[in-house]
Image (cartoon, rainbow, N blue to C red; front, top):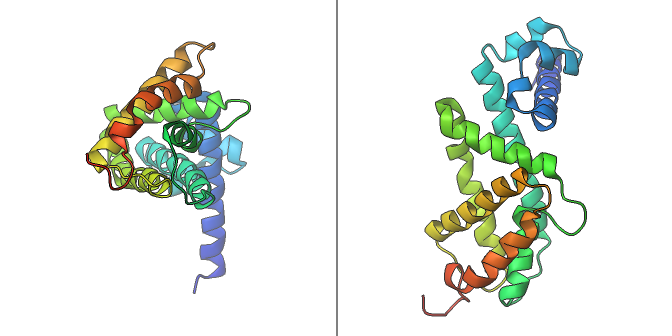
Length: 203
Protein backbone atom coordinates (compact mmCIF):
# COMPACT_ATOMS: atom_id res chain seq x y z
CA UNK A 1 0.00 0.00 0.00
CA UNK A 2 1.30 3.47 -0.86
CA UNK A 3 2.33 5.58 2.11
CA UNK A 4 1.15 9.15 2.58
CA UNK A 5 4.58 10.37 1.49
CA UNK A 6 4.49 8.22 -1.64
CA UNK A 7 1.00 9.43 -2.54
CA UNK A 8 2.04 13.05 -2.01
CA UNK A 9 5.14 12.51 -4.12
CA UNK A 10 3.12 10.97 -6.94
CA UNK A 11 0.69 13.88 -6.79
CA UNK A 12 3.57 16.35 -7.12
CA UNK A 13 5.10 14.36 -9.98
CA UNK A 14 1.75 14.40 -11.77
CA UNK A 15 1.48 18.15 -11.27
CA UNK A 16 4.92 18.64 -12.81
CA UNK A 17 4.11 16.32 -15.72
CA UNK A 18 0.84 18.12 -16.47
CA UNK A 19 2.62 21.49 -16.41
CA UNK A 20 5.31 20.20 -18.79
CA UNK A 21 2.71 18.88 -21.24
CA UNK A 22 0.82 22.18 -21.12
CA UNK A 23 3.99 24.13 -21.92
CA UNK A 24 4.82 21.75 -24.75
CA UNK A 25 1.42 22.15 -26.37
CA UNK A 26 1.42 25.92 -25.99
CA UNK A 27 5.01 26.77 -26.88
CA UNK A 28 6.79 23.70 -28.18
CA UNK A 29 9.42 21.37 -26.80
CA UNK A 30 12.09 24.09 -26.50
CA UNK A 31 9.92 25.79 -23.84
CA UNK A 32 9.98 22.69 -21.64
CA UNK A 33 12.81 23.51 -19.23
CA UNK A 34 13.06 22.72 -15.55
CA UNK A 35 12.70 26.32 -14.43
CA UNK A 36 9.72 27.04 -16.71
CA UNK A 37 7.99 23.82 -15.69
CA UNK A 38 8.53 24.52 -12.00
CA UNK A 39 7.04 27.98 -12.40
CA UNK A 40 4.01 26.63 -14.29
CA UNK A 41 3.48 23.83 -11.75
CA UNK A 42 3.96 26.14 -8.77
CA UNK A 43 6.67 23.99 -7.23
CA UNK A 44 10.32 24.62 -6.30
CA UNK A 45 12.89 24.13 -9.04
CA UNK A 46 14.43 21.37 -6.93
CA UNK A 47 11.20 19.37 -7.25
CA UNK A 48 11.41 19.16 -11.04
CA UNK A 49 15.07 18.13 -10.96
CA UNK A 50 14.28 15.56 -8.25
CA UNK A 51 11.69 13.76 -10.36
CA UNK A 52 13.30 14.48 -13.75
CA UNK A 53 17.05 14.80 -13.31
CA UNK A 54 17.85 15.66 -16.94
CA UNK A 55 16.14 17.53 -19.75
CA UNK A 56 15.92 14.22 -21.64
CA UNK A 57 13.93 12.77 -18.73
CA UNK A 58 11.58 15.74 -18.80
CA UNK A 59 11.12 15.62 -22.56
CA UNK A 60 10.60 11.86 -22.48
CA UNK A 61 7.71 12.16 -20.04
CA UNK A 62 6.22 14.94 -22.18
CA UNK A 63 6.32 12.75 -25.29
CA UNK A 64 4.95 9.78 -23.37
CA UNK A 65 2.11 11.62 -21.63
CA UNK A 66 1.00 13.70 -24.62
CA UNK A 67 0.93 10.55 -26.77
CA UNK A 68 -1.00 8.61 -24.13
CA UNK A 69 -3.55 11.42 -23.86
CA UNK A 70 -4.17 11.25 -27.60
CA UNK A 71 -4.42 7.46 -27.46
CA UNK A 72 -6.93 7.65 -24.61
CA UNK A 73 -9.05 10.04 -26.67
CA UNK A 74 -8.80 7.66 -29.63
CA UNK A 75 -9.79 4.71 -27.43
CA UNK A 76 -12.87 6.59 -26.28
CA UNK A 77 -13.87 7.19 -29.91
CA UNK A 78 -13.22 3.55 -30.85
CA UNK A 79 -15.33 2.35 -27.94
CA UNK A 80 -18.26 4.41 -29.27
CA UNK A 81 -18.07 3.11 -32.85
CA UNK A 82 -21.13 1.08 -33.78
CA UNK A 83 -20.30 -2.25 -35.40
CA UNK A 84 -21.53 -2.25 -39.00
CA UNK A 85 -20.19 -2.52 -42.52
CA UNK A 86 -19.09 0.86 -43.85
CA UNK A 87 -18.45 1.98 -47.39
CA UNK A 88 -15.46 4.04 -48.47
CA UNK A 89 -16.97 7.43 -47.58
CA UNK A 90 -18.23 6.42 -44.15
CA UNK A 91 -14.92 4.71 -43.35
CA UNK A 92 -12.90 7.73 -44.45
CA UNK A 93 -15.06 9.99 -42.27
CA UNK A 94 -14.63 7.68 -39.30
CA UNK A 95 -10.84 7.53 -39.66
CA UNK A 96 -10.48 11.28 -40.05
CA UNK A 97 -12.48 11.83 -36.88
CA UNK A 98 -10.43 9.16 -35.09
CA UNK A 99 -6.92 10.37 -35.90
CA UNK A 100 -7.34 14.08 -36.75
CA UNK A 101 -10.52 15.70 -35.45
CA UNK A 102 -14.27 15.57 -35.72
CA UNK A 103 -16.58 18.28 -37.07
CA UNK A 104 -16.13 21.75 -35.66
CA UNK A 105 -13.11 23.90 -34.94
CA UNK A 106 -9.77 22.25 -35.64
CA UNK A 107 -7.35 22.13 -32.69
CA UNK A 108 -4.24 23.22 -34.58
CA UNK A 109 -2.25 23.54 -31.35
CA UNK A 110 -2.71 19.83 -30.67
CA UNK A 111 -1.75 18.93 -34.23
CA UNK A 112 1.34 21.14 -34.13
CA UNK A 113 2.39 19.45 -30.90
CA UNK A 114 1.94 16.04 -32.53
CA UNK A 115 4.05 17.05 -35.53
CA UNK A 116 6.81 18.45 -33.32
CA UNK A 117 6.73 15.38 -31.09
CA UNK A 118 7.33 13.08 -34.05
CA UNK A 119 10.05 15.31 -35.48
CA UNK A 120 11.84 15.43 -32.12
CA UNK A 121 11.53 11.65 -31.73
CA UNK A 122 13.23 11.18 -35.09
CA UNK A 123 16.21 13.24 -33.92
CA UNK A 124 16.57 12.28 -30.25
CA UNK A 125 17.16 8.59 -29.40
CA UNK A 126 15.50 8.72 -25.97
CA UNK A 127 12.33 10.19 -27.47
CA UNK A 128 12.45 7.75 -30.35
CA UNK A 129 12.39 4.89 -27.85
CA UNK A 130 9.26 6.31 -26.20
CA UNK A 131 7.55 6.72 -29.58
CA UNK A 132 8.41 3.18 -30.64
CA UNK A 133 7.12 1.77 -27.36
CA UNK A 134 3.73 3.45 -27.79
CA UNK A 135 3.32 3.03 -31.57
CA UNK A 136 1.65 -0.43 -31.31
CA UNK A 137 -1.26 1.19 -29.44
CA UNK A 138 -1.94 3.44 -32.45
CA UNK A 139 -1.85 0.42 -34.76
CA UNK A 140 -4.26 -1.50 -32.53
CA UNK A 141 -6.71 1.41 -32.34
CA UNK A 142 -6.81 1.89 -36.11
CA UNK A 143 -7.25 -1.86 -36.62
CA UNK A 144 -10.08 -1.98 -34.06
CA UNK A 145 -11.89 0.94 -35.72
CA UNK A 146 -11.67 -0.75 -39.11
CA UNK A 147 -12.70 -4.13 -37.71
CA UNK A 148 -15.85 -2.48 -36.35
CA UNK A 149 -16.44 -1.19 -39.87
CA UNK A 150 -16.22 -4.65 -41.44
CA UNK A 151 -12.71 -4.08 -42.80
CA UNK A 152 -9.24 -5.53 -42.31
CA UNK A 153 -5.83 -3.88 -42.46
CA UNK A 154 -2.30 -5.14 -42.01
CA UNK A 155 0.21 -3.51 -39.70
CA UNK A 156 2.21 -2.48 -42.78
CA UNK A 157 -0.82 -0.74 -44.25
CA UNK A 158 -1.44 1.03 -40.93
CA UNK A 159 2.07 2.43 -41.38
CA UNK A 160 1.14 3.71 -44.84
CA UNK A 161 -2.03 5.22 -43.42
CA UNK A 162 -0.10 6.92 -40.62
CA UNK A 163 2.44 8.31 -43.10
CA UNK A 164 -0.40 9.78 -45.19
CA UNK A 165 -2.05 11.34 -42.14
CA UNK A 166 1.14 12.75 -40.65
CA UNK A 167 2.34 14.13 -43.96
CA UNK A 168 -0.84 16.10 -44.49
CA UNK A 169 -0.94 17.23 -40.87
CA UNK A 170 2.59 18.61 -41.24
CA UNK A 171 1.66 20.38 -44.48
CA UNK A 172 -1.45 21.86 -42.91
CA UNK A 173 0.64 23.37 -40.12
CA UNK A 174 2.51 25.40 -42.75
CA UNK A 175 -0.62 26.82 -44.39
CA UNK A 176 -3.47 28.11 -42.26
CA UNK A 177 -5.96 27.77 -45.11
CA UNK A 178 -5.43 23.99 -45.38
CA UNK A 179 -7.70 21.78 -43.31
CA UNK A 180 -5.98 18.38 -43.04
CA UNK A 181 -9.35 16.71 -42.56
CA UNK A 182 -10.34 17.62 -46.12
CA UNK A 183 -7.11 16.50 -47.77
CA UNK A 184 -6.79 13.33 -45.73
CA UNK A 185 -10.39 12.37 -46.45
CA UNK A 186 -9.88 12.89 -50.18
CA UNK A 187 -6.73 10.75 -50.17
CA UNK A 188 -8.42 8.01 -48.15
CA UNK A 189 -11.34 7.82 -50.55
CA UNK A 190 -8.89 6.81 -53.27
CA UNK A 191 -6.97 4.33 -51.12
CA UNK A 192 -9.25 2.93 -48.44
CA UNK A 193 -10.41 -0.13 -50.39
CA UNK A 194 -6.76 -1.03 -51.03
CA UNK A 195 -5.40 -0.25 -47.56
CA UNK A 196 -8.37 -1.71 -45.69
CA UNK A 197 -10.55 -3.95 -47.88
CA UNK A 198 -13.86 -5.24 -46.69
CA UNK A 199 -13.42 -8.38 -44.60
CA UNK A 200 -13.50 -11.40 -46.87
CA UNK A 201 -12.50 -9.50 -50.00
CA UNK A 202 -9.46 -10.70 -51.90
CA UNK A 203 -6.43 -8.51 -51.13
